Image (cartoon, rainbow, N blue to C red):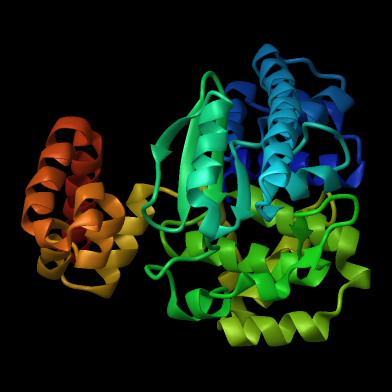
Length: 370
């Protein structure tokens, strides 16, 4: 395995286990390349803490860490203000993913946050938009799919979910979480806040990760999240319940393989020998950034279907996809042909990089077959 990847895993293992990294080993690392890799995986803050424990200072890492701490505080303050308005208007809600996970890490700011995810009452979507707009956010994506996206410069990004999975996702995930409210537990100290049990939080975390893992990949931070969560909560979790829920979701094999790999990789500062399948899985995590890569997604699809079929599916996406992608098609499905032309134009004008990536991956795919 690439030395740079080994260095990243070593520092992350040290920082989440309270181990002081070896100073001589850290001094020999290529910090410029390490910074780029840590940024790719959204783990710069954690690496910065590890470097400091080894007596190393690096300006880029230090700035990233301070930014992560400020952003986490800012997101928490904003979430508190927004959810206070949800309370006043009688909208039930539940914070998701990173906003919960970050508090399990050993130090504030160690787990970076890109955005804030909240599940809320889908019947109150218009009221939620009014609240977000009143807080100075712009609705970047609203009323299409299973979540709305709100942005406020310079760094705030909120995703408000009407459902955890949409009809475009794996049928087993969509079916299981169609009635998420049945799984929720009422918070103490407020009127409309909810949370998952520790077991259901882990099951959802796994299901959400598999969604990304199966469509382009997900970075090493996801594997680290699994390790930290199970390290803190694992002894008190009902694993029989978790196993059964994962079986219903058809993700049981992935859950076991991913958890086993997480503990192998992060439970000590020495990377153990991995089986061939474990090495392949770890490499897949390392090659994909936090929010997956277009290249990985395209390569997976080309393995599953012919190039001709892939091209046709991109030129003429199915109606459900077009409803999620183009607002006026969602409002009037008869405008599907117009939506197709609009989508082509949008790709040619605004997403040329996406088109060039498709062409590059397809060429590489053809070269492999020669």
